[in-house]
Image 1: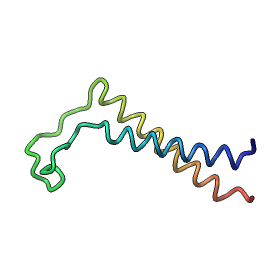
Image 2 (image 1 turned 45 degrees about the horizontal axis):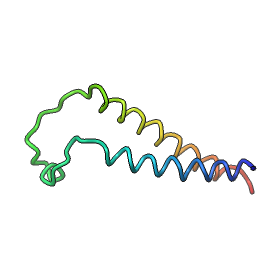
Image 3 (image 1 turned 135 degrees about the horizontal axis):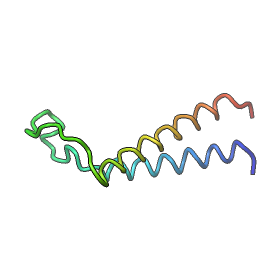
Length: 75
């Protein structure tokens, strides 16, 4: 398995996991929240919500770095 295949697999896996993690997040889940009418104040993330948020950032970083590496490595 070469580096190009590993980067493509990393893009697919991190992209799919990012979609799942974003859908698992609860903040602003109602339709009115999308238009600014949620009516709730900002609260700090705690527990599982904070963990999901941090893991989403990690997978987003892996996704972007994999795409940049794939663009810079000649085939």
